[in-house]
Each structure stands twice: as C-alpha cells, then as structure tokens.
Length: 48
Image (cartoon, rainbow, N blue to C red; front, side):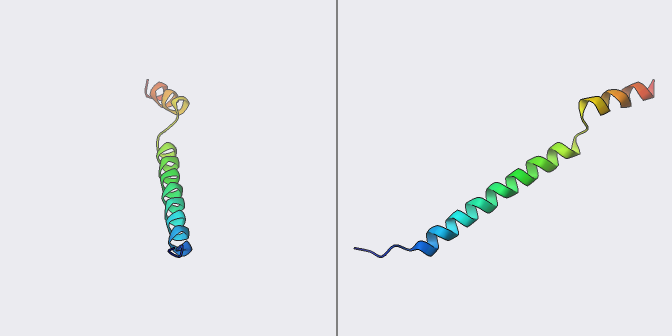
C-alpha cells in the first residue's frame, strides 16, 4: 500500500484557503469602491 503524502494535502488546503481569502478581499474592496445608494442620492441632489 502506498504511503500517504500529507504535506501535499496540507499544501493544497493552504492554497485553497489563500484563494478563498483573496476572493473575499477583492469582493470587499469592490463593495468599498462603490458609493452607497444614500451617498449617490445626496450627490445627485447637491448638483440641483
């Protein structure tokens, strides 16, 4: 029977974790870049 390669499994889990964390960070930064509806409404009213 073949010996299990635990370091490979651990590395794959770490890569998946980093990828998920990066996607979450990008999603969060995209949300922060967009002004909220309230801020947009106020900005439109200031122009008038």
